[in-house]
Image 1: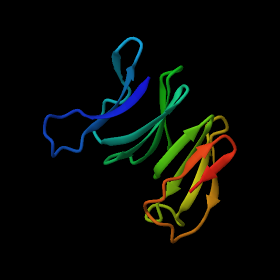
Image 2: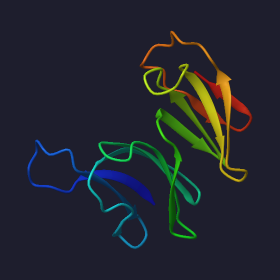
Image 3: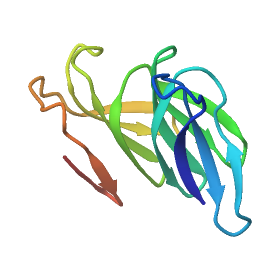
Image 4: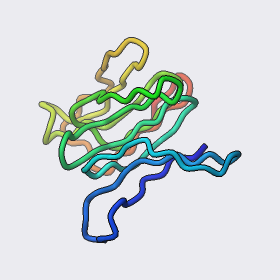
Amino acid sequence: MFPLSIQRNEDVTSNDYDIVIYDLKTKKETMITNESGLETDPIIYENYICWEKNLGDDGLFLHDLSTKETRQIVPQGARHDIYGHYIVFRRSSLAWADGGISLYDIKNDKTYKISTENEMESNIDPKIYKNHIVY
């Protein structure tokens, strides 16, 4: 399966994008989101899809394909990656008291600060693999 962010509106100036998953075996698309807002940068790992939403209820969102449940995991975040039951993301210094890198534990519903550097570049794109985070 492959997650996509598609523009739902014919108007190319619209900021209305949704998350769709495409099943390579069945060749079928399934809408994951269907609401107003700019939902972008979907990442998939096993049963989880994580994406960023702007315009409206901002933040990082998580969808569990097995339960079909969607939840907001943090109110503001950007540049994210997922591995196992962890999501690593860059905190915006505009929305958080300090910028930096955080780790969200899906199973325990907890967020941990990894780095608290305020002056991190906005293009930092953290990645996670097994027990390692790079940024």
